[in-house]
Each structure stands twice: as structure tokens, then as C-alpha cells.
Amino acid sequence: MARAGKAGLMFRKPKHERQIDSGMPEEFRWSIPAAQAVSMLSNLEFERLDDPELSDLKRLVRDAHREIIDRGLIEAASRFALEDDPKRSKKRDAASWGVRQLICAMMCAADAGIEPFASEPVRFVEDPEPERDWSILPDSLAPLAEFAERFGHLQFEGNIVAFLDHASEQEWDELRRLAAFYSEHHAAVDEFSMREDLEDRPEMHRVFSLPLLLDHAGLTG
Image (cartoon, rainbow, N blue to C red; front, side, top):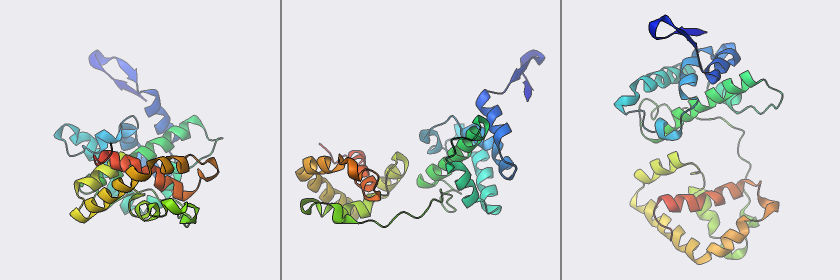
């Protein structure tokens, strides 16, 4: 739909906004304004939703947050956001991306302690993670299983920073133990992480995330 600009001139919405609008399924059409607003933004903006300069964005995301909870659509929206169908249209692809970004905005705001997102979290609902089998680790790296189980879910900058901001002294002690272990065994850990026959295993995703966590904690080098 065209919009009126200065001096009565008409201009069209950006292409991605038009695609989100035309590709959004009926059950999620309430999300269009918020999905359009967040579709081209990054986690850095989402983590700053309490900034007065982002008050309009926060209002849109907050309204969508209320709708998705009240309508009981967290699981359905998650499925739509994460659907992987190579045959879907570009319009539906854009709409799916907009909803995915919207859920990411809610997650980042929750991890940053911003209300109402923190007290009523909305997160992706995925298939249960397969059971992990740490017998794949060589004996020398067996202690890595404990650290990966404890911290391996922290795989994105937003939730890593939020965790570190509120980490207890006990948790910092555990991180320092991890850093000491990694410093002593980093070559073996790196070699293990490069094994192509294990790259798709759920254990590996947790192992991969540990150096990023240590880097943000300032415990590398």
C-alpha cells in the first residue's frame, strides 16, 4: 500500500515490508507492524528496548508480545518462524523472517531483564534436543562434559552478556575453572572440535559455544 509523504507525494513501503504484509498468514496478521519494524534490526537494538529513543519500537514489540501470549500462539509462531521449506514463496519467506526477528527481539529483551518480556518470556519452541552422549569425548577431555552441560546453552551474545551480568561468585569460580582447563587443553579441544564425523551432534554445539563464553568473560589469552 502506498503512503503519503511530504507535499502530498506518494511513496511505496520498502520491499521487505510489502512482502511481510502480503506473505503473512491470517493467524499472524496482528504481528505485521512489529514484524516490519524489527525485520532489519539486530540484537543490539533488541537489548536496548528500554532506551527512550526506542520507545515506539518497544511499544510495537510489547503489543505483539501480549498478543502472542494471550492468543496462545507461541508454539505456532515458533513453527512458522523456523519452517524450512525451499518451495515457499519469497513473500512467505519474508513473513517467516519477520516473525523470527520478532521472537528474537522478545528473547533478547527478556535476557536483558526488560519487562514485561523478562517475567513472561517468549522463546522458540523447538523439537526436544536429543540426549547427549559424552562418551564421544577422549578421556583427556572428559571434564569438558561438565562445563558443556553447565554453560553450553549460552550460544548467543545476548544471553551470554545477560548471564555474565548476573553471574554469582560461584558461577565465576566455575568459569575460571573452565578457563584453566581450556588453557591447558586448548589444542586437544580444538582438534576434537574439528572432527567432521561429529559436527552435527548436539554435544558439539555446546562445546563450540564455550570459547565464546570465555572470551566475553575476559578469561581468554
